[in-house]
Structures are given as C-alpha cells and as structure tokens.
Image 1 (cartoon, rainbow, N blue to C red):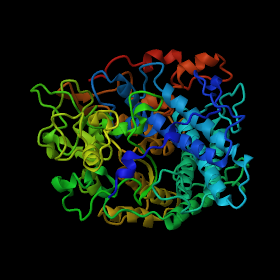
Image 2 (tube, one colour):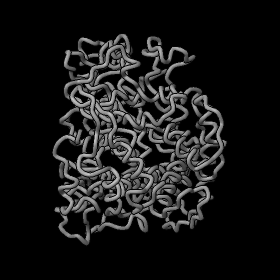
Image 3 (cartoon, rainbow, N blue to C red):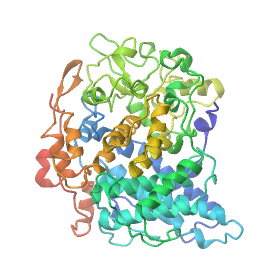
Length: 612
C-alpha cells in the first residue's frame, strides 16, 4: 500500500482565501479577495475548488467544531469524556453549553464554505468551455455538492440560519425556514451535482466529490428532511409528497421518493464502489506496520485497504503540513484521532497509556469514549463490535484509569484512534510515535509535520460516506432487505427480514462511532415530539451509566436536568453563537434557537463537571 501521496502532498491552493461572505453574517470579515480581477482563467477555478475543500480542514482544526465528532458525542453512543477540565466536551455530551464562543469556529467555517461555493458557481461561465464541457460540468457539480454539504451541516447544527444562493450575500441576510426554504435548496444542490457529474470523472479517493457522493448525500438529506421535518416515520411505507425544488442548472423537476431510490441504486450499481472483504480492513489498525504484531488482526490475509479505498465514497483528507498557527493550522492532520485516543495522564500508581503496554493504540485526550450502557446493548455475537470497540481491560496489557479522567469508560473507538507499531519511539513520542510517523521516517527524510508525532502524525481519512451506508439507506427507503443482508454477510452475520427495528439496529451497529447516529435518531423521531420521542428516550438511557471519574468508578447523571428534557427543549439543535446575535442586534434578522435563550441560562450553561 502506497501511503506516501497521503502523507506528503502539498496543495498550497487549499489555503486560498477567496470568499464573498459579508461580515454581517459573522463577527469577522472574509471579503479580502478582489473579485473584479479574479478568477482570471479557468485554472484559477481549480484553486478556488481546492480552497472550497480546504474549509473541511478548517473545521478539523478543532474536532469539537466538526459535525462528525460533535454529533458522535451528542448521541447516545458516546460520552464527552476527556479530563476533568474538558468542560466543553462534557457540555456537548449533555446537550448544554459552557461558553458563548462554543461553536463560533463551526459557524465561521460554514459560511466561508458557502461563500466559496457560490463564488465558483457564479464565476464558472465567465469563460469559454467549448470542447471542455465535461470538465466544466464536473467542476460546477463539485461546487454545488459542497454548497449543499455546508448548508446541510449548518441546518442540522442550527436549524433556521441565514441563507443565500447568489454571488454575494444580501444585506441584511435574515434567518430563513430550514424546512420551507433551505432544505429544498440543499436537495436541489445535490440533484444538480448528481446530474452534472459523471461516474469515473475523477480518480476514486482523490478527495473530490463524485456523482456517487452526490447520490448518497441526496438520500441522506432527503431522509432527514422527510423524517425530522415532515415526521414521516417509517420511510418504506410513508406517503411522501414530492419536494418542490428551486430551479437551477441540473434540476429538471420536483424530487420524489422514487427519484432518491433510483439515485441510490445507481450509486450501488454504477458508482465503482464495493464492500471490502473484511470490515476490519476499513480501519487503520490493520496497517502493514502494526498488523503483524496485533493478535486481533493476524488472521487477515491482507492489510489495511488505505485512504480512498473502494468502499469510501466521500471523506476528509489530510496532509503533512499542519502547524499550531494559521486559520487551518492543525486541521491538516486528523486531530480527531488525537482527541479519541487513550487518556495520556498517569493513574494513581504512575502508569501511563500509549506505550508498549497499550499497543497498538496511542495516547491522546481520551474524549468520546463509548457509553457503557450503549456498548452493553450491542450483542457480543456481532463481529463488528470487537472491530469497533476497544475494551481496554480485556485487550490491553495494562490500561491506566488516570487521576484526571472524567466520563471514562475504558471503551474506545478503534475506528478513529491513534495507532502505534512496535517500531514506535515510546521513550520520545515527539519523534516517530504513531505508525504514520514510523512509515514517514522509513520512507522519506520529511520531518513530522508540526514537530510532534504524538500530536501531528495522524493522516487516516475521516470517512463521511461509505457504500454500506448507501446500501442501508436503500433498504430503509425500499424495504428491500437484500442490500442490508449484503452488509451483514460481510460481517459474517445471517440474513434477516426487513423491519423498521431491524434497519434501525443495523445502521446503528454498522456505523457505530462514525457520527451518523445522532441525526438518525432525530429523523426517526420527528421535530417537536417531546421527551417521549425515539431520540429523547434513547439519549436518556445514558442516565446512571457507569463511568470512571479520577480513577474511581461511579455513575453518571445529567448535569442539570435530563437528556430527554434537553433534547425536547432543543430538538437537537445547537446554540447559535451569541456573538453573532449581538453583532446583528435585530431579532427579525437573527434570533437564538429554542432551548438556548437567556431565560434558560441556569439550565443549559455548564460551568463545572457533570453530576456523579
């Protein structure tokens, strides 16, 4: 497996700064580029496109601003965890807040992404594409896809947000209804992307959006829209009205359930993707330097399928150019791996994690540990459980429950963790500590990206969409169990019939710990369905779960009221950064989400540790 292109790529265009987002949408001004003389040539649009993808790395600078990590912690599958001082992750896990600026970076990144997408969409036809129509359509399709993606993240984070679909934002740019305005535009963007792009137009796994990615995200957005906003319930049998789409290039009519099913079918049949032969090959702990010494994977006939493998449809990519400075900074390395790895402080006896005693998993901040009760709900007969959940007390030689840990369970996410190998420099983890660092040092003279292998040598993709997810969405929409059973067969599990319970369960365990669960339970509940909803009931199961706090086992309870109450109050939406509301100072333009107003300050503002 050639990993070098992943570790050492240098794409300076990723940090290109062209945007058109006006400062009334933000506390900062992102209108630095002179659009009167740029772009000057079609090649300039490729730089803008690289910058558009680079916004995903801006989110990654702090995992607690990324959709996948935040939603994983907010779900019933994971705790915030980390240290006693990591109030931010605790607050997110309890559907609360600990500071005004909690999601400022996510808000900024969302609007930078939207602005960059709009800049490409409205500049593309300033040039003559005669003879290069396919190139033009692919570029435009990718821009539509990314605009849809950033708006999808925005509305799933905050609900009704300011929105615009023009070259520049109007002033003022008020909140609009996500249900009535933004979601139809999101669906239209994915339809445009799907129809403008062609299968095989880009090299698989090169980081670009594809027709298959647009088809998969069309389904993801459509299913959330119908389930959450329209309260459709079981989608297989729901009578769903066509969605009236705004007209734009690539959109030829309204959107029906049948259209979405056909898109998924096309992705499965013609996208060029396939399920890997073994579930474990998706995850970096099966890499060539680690697997020979890791008993759990010694039976495999091959090693890790690598970044951009044939099951991945869309992902966030990383490269060896991170630093602690700049807008993106550490976003060029997979900081999620660092946050999700074994808590690195000492226990009462002076033991530490991340060395030979915890091989092959490295140290980190110890956040997003799996919830004790949720792990208990997963049958041990499912091989994916052990492939996903690291049970530290069983699999590691000596695991340290540190004197600083909070919401610790000893259950870690193998999909996202830092991985070491027996050639790792245990005595000096600033050098070649992770297996990536060892691979780098063995195959090049390039220094580790930020001078610290423990914190910076993390280059596994964050997989945002893979084929098994698409196959399970197809089963959920159609009731055709064959695709679900192909996913199960890959895991070595017997066939089962379609039922709503079965597809809900299958999605949970196949995608466990990947940041998908939270929005699944929201759409299975419907908006404004109270403390008895599917989501609220699932989240409330965290109450009384077993946790380790500062080296002592105890039970966890909600920090103010209950998970069910907080979900009912907020519908799972986050607080709009208060600085944005103060900056505009006009409730007709921007107002706070339900459940986060000043009248509830004492209920949602978390200043200390949860209740144990």
